[in-house]
Length: 214
Image (cartoon, rainbow, N blue to C red; front, side, top):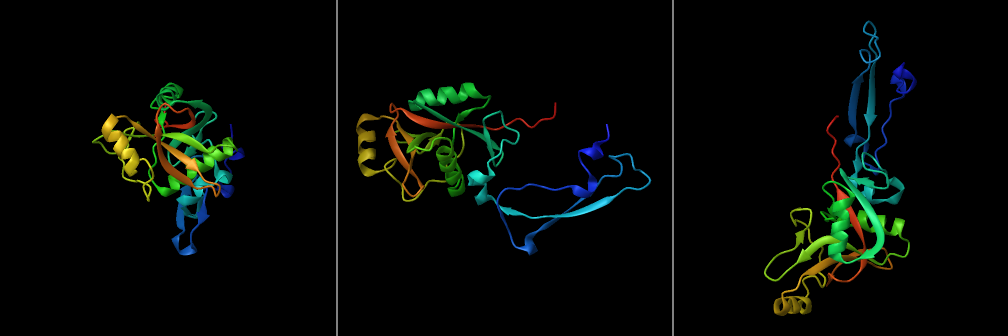
């Protein structure tokens, strides 16, 4: 099979989702195709300038893609995500995520851009979605924890009722778990909020795909 029919050296291009940065931040990529296509005596060196993009735009539904993820899942920054519209308790949702994929859990949130991506994913698949579960939870005497083991190095400010004085008082007295959901405002903002884990909500699962060559 002549691979040039599928990968012509003169037409190599890259699709990178997001906003293009200024020209002075473009990176030059060089690819040597001669040996790949058996042209050892006349290798063709192709130079492509590949724009570097702002990762914040990966949250835009226009740039959603499956990438290396399973069917129905969306790739974002090396993780795979699935919005599940079925309403389940927090623990039920976590169990479903674990069964959906190896290493699957309710999603963690690592940055404001990540937060925006999750909101857009939920509204893209469920137009009437107002809130959904994430993998965060909190108990008396402990900090926010994610079911996937991620370090809680990002907490949305201002802190909502997850650590609200009233919720904290109830937590201290009853020692109950408070689970983290995202409320989607009319303006499309994703606001963190604590809730009774027995409440039934849609949810988002995530897992890291295995990219090891077979």
